[in-house]
Length: 234
Ligand code: ATP
View 1 (tube, rainbow, N blue to C red):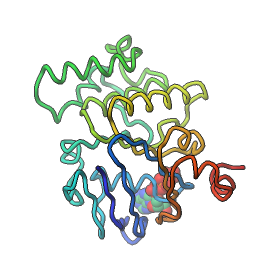
View 2: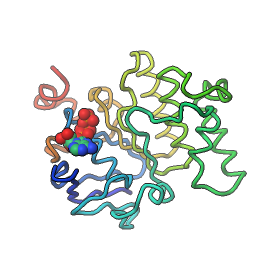
View 3: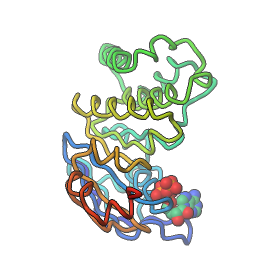
View 4: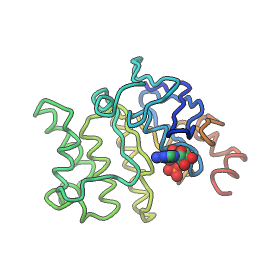
């Protein structure tokens, strides 16, 4: 479904991605693990079209989307839930969700997506008329995920969804990611909490200073001594 082929991405002179290749197949949860500054956010931003690779390519269902900007990739079926949620704090919950559907047409279809999102996140229904900035951290994360789902993506890119959340809420978010995946959306997940990410993922990639250094089935990575020492803090 998604094929990232040897991408190089720069910030000015800073060579952040030095040939990253990865794939996400239909139905999968794939996690990208790596320490701070490894290039995880840069990778998902390049896929989503917020940054453009200077070399290499990004392909989605066989189509070259390397040069497409974010408003176009969302129409192709890729939605990003950015690090730090980036919800619109002075809009209501409902208005934030409306923004997620901006790329779509077909009222009945969009209405159905609202039902799906509110079924997945009943709290958002309860709080739909409330200003988004007044939600708790966990609720804001749910809103960011709900807003992305309103674009009806085939692939969801999640950048640090559990960051700053209490442990109980972290569990809830991970359960919801699995549920979203069960309902047919593929997921590329970036997480500080690498252990939990590998527990729900099918496969994983380890990124170090802009390069993929390991790729395997998630359970194999979880059981690797090297990964446990370097990335799982054991
Ligand atoms: P984190 O978990 O801290 O977000 P990350 O793995 O997501 O880390 P990136 O944010 O992708 O890492 O950063 C990769 C490299 O690019 C780092 O060396 C970082 O300092 C650099 N970088 C990131 N954003 C910028 C920017 N806007 N301008 C210049 N350099 C940047």
